[in-house]
Amino acid sequence: MEILLQQLINGLVQGSIYALVALGYTMVYGIMGLINFAHGEVVMIGTLVTISVAGLLLKLGLPVALAGGAGLLAAVAVCMALGWGLERIAYRPLRNAPRLTPLITAIGMSIVLQNVAMLVWGRNYLTFPAIAPKAQFEFAGASFTAVQVMIVLVSALTMAGLLVLIYRTRLGMAMRATSQNPQVASLMGVNVNRVIAAAFVIGSALGAVAGVMVGSYYEIAHYQMGFMLGLKAFTAAVLGGIGNLAGAMAGGVLLGIIEALGAGYIGDLTGGFLGSHYQDIFAFIVLIGVLMFRPSGLFGEKTGDRA
Amino acid sequence: MAEVLLRAAGVGKHFGGVKALRDVSLTIGLGEVYGLIGPNGAGKTTFFNCLTGLYVPDGGAFDFAGRPLKADAPHQAAERGIARTFQNIRLFGNMSAVENVMVGRHVRTGAGVFGAMFRDARTRAEEAAIRRRAAELLHYVGIADRADDLAKNLSYGDQRRLEIARALATEPQLLCLDEPAAGMNATETEELRLLIEGIRRDGTTILLIEHDVKLVMGLCDRVAVLDYGEKICEDVPAVVQKDSRVIEAYLGGSVA
Image 1 (cartoon, chains in turn cyan, orange):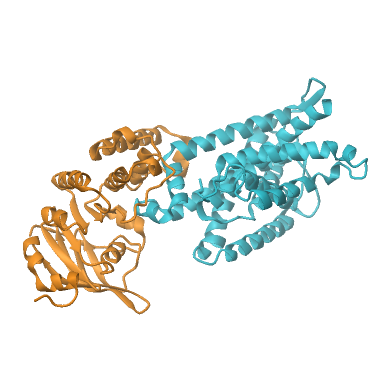
Image 2: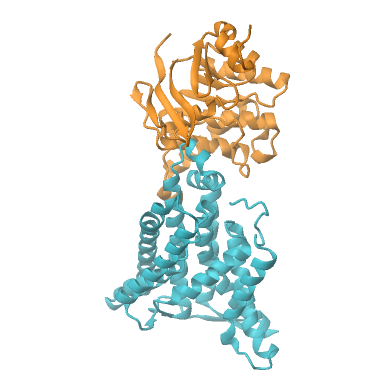
């Protein structure tokens, strides 16, 4: 029973991170039908930028809260610029190309970004600076840390903010209109190029927040960390119904919980043959299962209408 | 004719070997209701698409309100004051009626990414104004009570009205209506006629594609007839109706 509760908490935390990253995939897909496989690398760069900026400020003797805040802001700013640049340089020239072309370009950009990160930050594991509180709590036999609480709270707040943006603001209205019919939206004066750029910029900002969370949760980072995280978040987006915002959020949390439960019980289930380091297989079992039995995802409409 | 609002000079467009528009020239005066008629496939909608920037014409040019129309991006045509509806209704089906109209306000408002993220006072005031104006327009076309329904759930006639409200939201000088009466019964058509007359009275110039001859003849100040992409006639409705080339185009072959 303690294991169940503990793994549910761990899954919720991990799932909150997946959800934020998944939103980046799903927003871009919803508006232009592209799977931006470089998104995981944007998250990775967010983590590494925070390490550099917050680490430097801490060394200069600034208070922890200030250094952490500055690190987060720097990550968000760099990632937004990166998302904007990716769209402008890599995807916009291919707007009218066959669908496979931008997809391959996205994989290419992912490799480019990994290598740039390796050149800038080196190939070793980096320690994430101690910007997060260290407190620990107990509840019904399960324990959780202040970092975990913060991850869930910040993630929930960020997602609420995104929903307000999409459903209440002029820009969000334009984004939803563009996802339904870009041509008609442009006749209403919506600058489709700007809306697509905004989807990349906002998705990347969410990715940066997720990057800081990953860093403060695992306290370690690496130039290849974006690859697996990106695949998991993509799986979460597909699970929820790619293109659907609520789907990405639910899919992220659900995937986190499935993974945590899987990792918690796989040892018992296989008589100790497989250990918890096999937890990655659950995400991909889910991906294959969804693609086989419900390709439109949990929240996706059969008609393929995109939010 | 009063001041010229739109001047099309020698507009041409072909798709492969098909010449959809050949050298079409016409002028529309400020405040007119101008009809564009012709048999199916005559090039009427192609003309709309060229005018609103969905197609780039192969030849010719548009002059709008005294300046050339560089219509290679549709949002620029909207900015200059040209709005349209569609023959086959193209609403944002999964958005509410009022939201559809709010999208139309986009071209006349300015808040961007940062306004949306930081919600400053100016942005919030602008968004409140957008919602107010959208509600007024729904009232104007007579579907205020359906404001919060999804566009796809509206009745056919209401969807047509919603398209007009959405187009009006862009504050057009020229409103292009592509077969607004298609599929409407006599009562709905009469209501539509009253609506279009109201829009004209409120100062918007109208370019109307329509098959309903009675509606065209009752509403339009002047009518142009397209056949196989060419303008074969342009005059007041009473004259066009009796033009032998027009009768021939519609009925095929020569009529004795």
